[in-house]
Image (cartoon, rainbow, N blue to C red; front, side, top):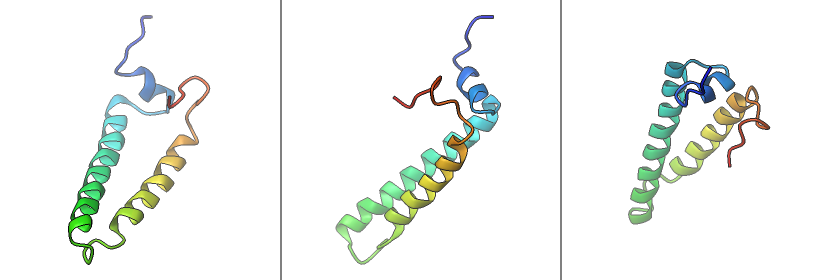
Length: 78
């Protein structure tokens, strides 16, 4: 069966295409919002004081939990 770029990776991490879409999309939106908060904080240092670091910490924990099921030898990040 030929490789399918839309389902190969999601299958490798134990998800359907739509489950992976939801999970990866959620991470992307969270990263974007955290990044925007950091940019606002850069200009107004009295707002979003811990938002960036808390966002990074939560995403790190979340991704590490999900990553435990992935075959990193077959699907390296880089």
